[in-house]
Length: 334
Image 1 (spheres, rainbow, N blue to C red):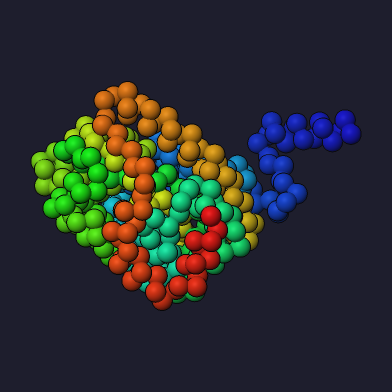
Image 2: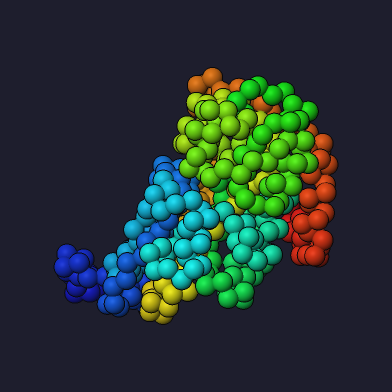
């Protein structure tokens, strides 16, 4: 026993890796470097989740796989990144995306995660993310031959509207220009609320609010603060229309560069990062909300969301009609 301990200590000193019994060691496999795109800063929930994933991958592979995170949108908007990844380029290998971002590329199942007022709580979402149904959603891009595949799920809190001018409730959204991504469900939701959807890239949103090109937008609370949107739109309406579900994807080309051992390590690191995200998100969001209140942000509580959901009835029914049975399963997980 003492001899074994000495050998393990020597291995650690020399930088050798003692492999987990759960999967074969990848330390001696060919070295691979993966570029990981993130549109938000590293101090956000999604940024910290990406860092946790990176560190775990490098630990489990003994450094044979390294992940270089390019944060704060330096590689472009989410759509720019996806266009690059799905177009077969080899400059971006991984990305954290909104879980429903692939709907623009034909991923119908993922669309259900973006339907307004679907998830009633964080627990509801995690019931899904940890269920047998989640891999079916993650693997949809593979079935569609999109050239990417999902590794794990996470979330960044419920998404809420924020505005330049104070609002008291739903009726005040009438006629407002609200920034949205180029997504039919988001457009339909904003129309349902009586506002005008305005497509603007995320990188231009701060200046669009500052110059009043738009009257408001929507983001999870942590992103609202980390991108300093409260400086130009200090009214936060806690309507929680959509849970900010996320997933991390990798291109098939990058996946195929990895050995079987390295692939197992990425999936293991994904499971670790998913759990890390679940523990981080609620705690971080509550802390950020309190700091926003202390900074003077006008926080408007929405006690009853029934009227909001009713306003979105048309887009909800239209977007779920072709997958009614699957959507009901999702709803029933609460």
